Structure formats: C-alpha cells, structure tokens
Image (cartoon, rainbow, N blue to C red; front, side, top):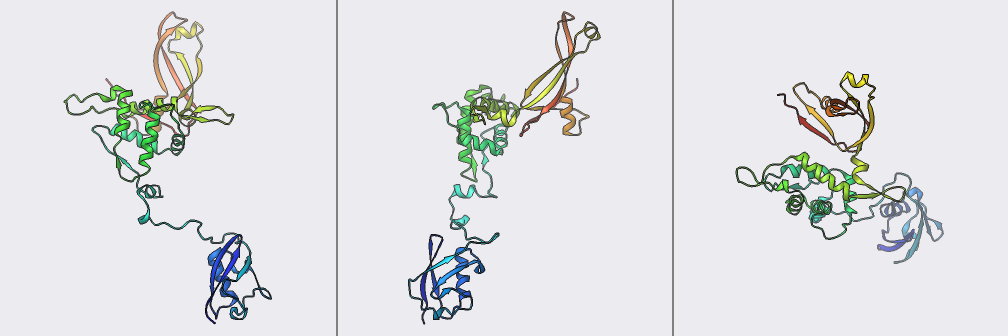
Length: 320
C-alpha cells in the first residue's frame, strides 16, 4: 500500500496528513499532535468501526485519498501550542521590525553641536512607557510647527523604526524657535552655546503639561504630567523672629504641588537622600503682617505624595 493523504477536520480547520502503510493509530495521533497541539491521549478520532485505537493498523482501515476524518479534543493545560504566526528571523525583518524586537539596540541621537543637554533630556523621557503610549494617541489641533508635543511624537516615532543614530533637527529648530535662549551662540563665535539640561527639561515638561491630556475615569481629561510626574508637599512657613511669635503670628501650613525635588550638594553631602533633605528647607524673605516689615522666614516641606516618575534636580552649593 502506498502512502495516502487524508484530510483531518478539527475545530473548523482542515489538515492534510500523509498516512504511511506501516503506521499505527499511535503514529497517526502523534502526527496530529504536531499539527493541532492536542496530546494523543486527549484525541478522539472517528474512523470506520468507531474510535481509532493506538494499536490500530492504519493500512487495514480502508482509507481513501482525500477522505475526511473527524477529530475531537482540546490541548491540556500547559500544552505546547503551534505558533499562530509564522516565525520570522531577524535577518528577514525590515529595519523598523528589527528595531522593535526585545533586546534591540535603542536608537541614539546625533549631537548637532552642543546639543547633548537636549539629547539627554529626550532620551530620559523616551524611557517612560506611559509617555510613549500617550504621545502615540496625541492629535495636534492644527499644523503648528511649534507644537513641541507633536514634534516629540514624530521624533520618537522615527526613533522606534531604527537602531541607528537619529538627528533631531526638526525638533531642535522648533525648540529654539519656541525658546530663543537655546539658540544663543557660543562666546568664542563657534557654533551654539552649551545649555542647561534642567532648563530644557523644565520647558519640555511645561509644554507636555499644557498639551498632553489623557482621559480620566469620570470621562473628563487630565494632564499626563499631573498624573505621572506631579507630587505634593505639605509646607510650613514660620517667621524666624521671636518678636513675630510673641505678637501672635502662627506658622502657615499649606499644600503645594511639585514637578521636581531639588538635591542640594555641598562638601558634606554623601548620599542623594542627604541632598534632598537639605532641599526641603529654605530661607525666604517676606513681609510680616504682624511686624509690619520684611522678615526672614523658614519654609519646611514634607513630601505628602510621590509621583510615579520622580524628577530630582541636583544643584551644587558654593560657599562664599
């Protein structure tokens, strides 16, 4: 008996299976296991004479080419299932497909002349997955070239499609137009001046706070920045002068939002937390209503709510 091909029908799909003359029912079930993922002991195959037995001789079942055989059964828990999509090797992928695979090298940003401050800021923001999701759904209100939120969306979209360096020229031009201080020329006359990354960060965050809105549970909209990057202080403001307290002036307690913590670094700062603690206390000068003149106050802040993504700004304190 020569090899014949039968059609096995299972859960709405049809599989062409070659049956060898020497095959047993167990061999046939193993073939179907490789195609359907249903283990042999969970298969119910209907042939002439009833349900197919493991010891059955397939050559004696009177099978005809193209004959349709019904199979029932589902894979057990933890069973190996054939992939629903054809496996695609990296060598066969487009550049964009390869860039989106796990372990792919992230796209870099080309330094366009003292723009490392901006590149570092953009790469840090790109590492926030919730921001990428929100930007992907962002719809600008018009064709405003100074819409930095839309420029950011476009830049990150381009970066997600490559593992090479990307020159952020369009974003940089829009950024410098919106904030001319970042277009200052170097004092030596060669190229643009170096800028502060914290200032660039603050301006980009300000733009996102205004533009990037996300839906809330009650059907309204909220700022993405407020949801993911805004924390809250409980602050106490108290006059340093004993005369103010004797006159009945009470410490003022308020709540204040914040988008970054200041880390004050001096010669005694050994750890990040030490610098942050120093940044939570500051001296300010303001008019005392009780004293009727300017006085020095101490403002002490305590963190009452931390954001999911905390921004810390380090500042070096120089003693005179």
